[in-house]
Length: 358
Image 1: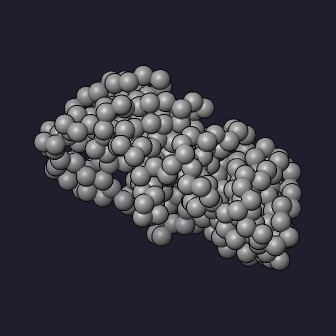
Image 2: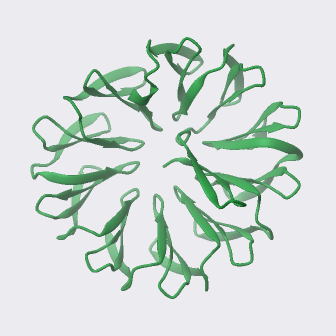
């Protein structure tokens, strides 16, 4: 899952790596000073411009003016690497994955743990899980601070979500691993699939649309959808008759009789522009019509959709409620986890987090 920023005028999507943060955000002022917002506390981290900022659940990493990779957590910072090799570090919500010197590692609670050793290690990771092919070429999984072997069959492909692993064996069986348990989804590889949290959406070999949701498998369509997008436990798709449908909590509901102008999913939050150009959010089983126009720009996190109106003022759907974030015109804004960071016209940075303005 990544934080998503949309510019609807151009119908383009920019995806940022600042996806996993919860109560932490960062910004750089017009003088190049780098600041962190950490659950209501704002402090200066660097007096000079930094690059390649990446956020985790309660930490961030970046490259400072001396080209060092820095790590910040709980009010303290330390050097991770004296070289600007930020690409070696992959933040998630609960830990950080790194590949240093040919060793696959996780960094959690400021401690490192080696997972595998070797050149060109194949791996996939999510917020709380890492899958990798070890030296013996068997698929191993790191989860809840333990490592175990997922299968002793050769694996041709595998993917990770926040807490699940899907894989296809060389024998062409399709499996899901969740919480240490392995489930056979199909005895033939899918034509395509999307992985959520104990949740898989897939087109089988006949291009029929299926969903596996916490132990239950349903066939949703006998013909392939025109398009589909899946989150942690939600699916939205345009069916072959051009209807727009959402699957949530075991049920499929038609949202529109025609395809939306645009739709996106982050975790379990669906945002879409309907055929009239209205802004909608579907969240926790309920549809909310937020505006009767198409916002010039908007950004998302799970349960959060921030957007500007036609006058440039900032609003948001924040975990079930529509709120006014700023009644002043904003120059820019971002959603960094549960923090909405924005700048007003004088360049001053402000924040909205957990019901409070900072």
